[in-house]
Figure 1 (cartoon, rainbow, N blue to C red):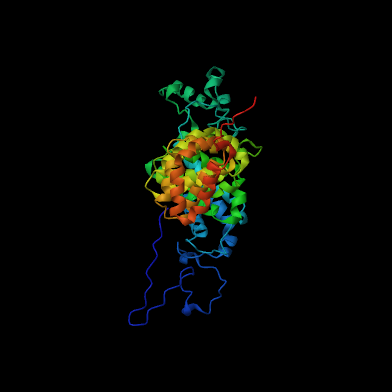
Figure 2 (spheres, helix red, strand yellow):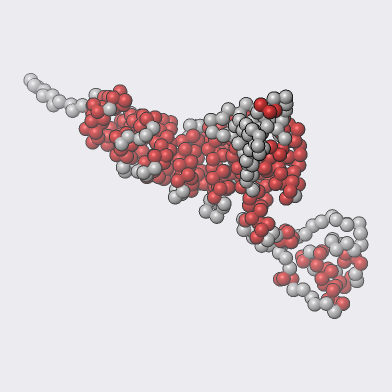
Length: 456
């Protein structure tokens, strides 16, 4: 959608300059407008990306917004998307007490998803198979152009039923001297009559991206999390976007991925096999595979978000059976991210490994056996990472690994490195003291002295 430019408001020539409106308030809300009611909603002409929108604006226009999205008319759709973008906009560290939650606008989420689905219906390839064209329009009329027009013709002119009733007019036109159309030249699908040109496709794409951005913004609002996490159509659309990330619009994929990451703490992948109505046949396995595709992407924002998503999903034990089968691929990729120079990639990988090592014994065993895993976790601590919390989690990962008896033989080779951090960095000395205790003080690791039996 086109971005609005905020006008520059200056004082009249020869007079004092009008004081600029405070951030978060509508223009004209300064001292010159003190008589206005503070609870009055901002006029639509004054709404801008950096301005808060009063909640009563949505309350008064919620029905019109939904109907505008459903209408498909360009002007109405543009107005609705622009309005929702302003309503859902939230600046960093801004406490928006009067933000409009999605629950207050019935049918809004479905209408936004329909905008995205309309664009995906255009871009996704279809199998070109002619299907019967069934219509009841003008069924009681003799000649309408649809359905039963062959009844007005001779019985010899009745077309082959397999070609569809709409072909009889073409067959009859051959008797009047007109050229007979070859069936192979017919449109394979009636929808092709409404195909868009390049400009129309670009506009549809912009609408879909704007709708996905609005849904992403709504996912940041705590009031909407439960509704969206239990909305199967919303999750199916988002997972289908990231599944087709190679061919899909990048901004649309990014918005879908961030939406899922925001909803991940409440997300149960079993929703894809539930009894809720399904619009797109997404299964739990396909959803996990879509996440793995994003994890292996070369785009930093995507693989960092996918790592964070896996770390949040694995906290729910019901998601484990769908994620653990991809364990070897996950550990290998996360260990690769630990070696990336980008600190946010390291932080995302450590966060995901921290949760994986906390919840599952099999994860701890396979992660310890992953090549370079221990070395790179130690590297994160020794460098150190700019965020101390990341280093702390890396140390706890090592502590979780050493808690498994099968891993102690592997970790004993790093005993000197653990001791060096113990004496050099007081922030993690307690953690590495426990690690060394686990490695050296267990009875299974003590060298059993030889006992001689005398007098026998």
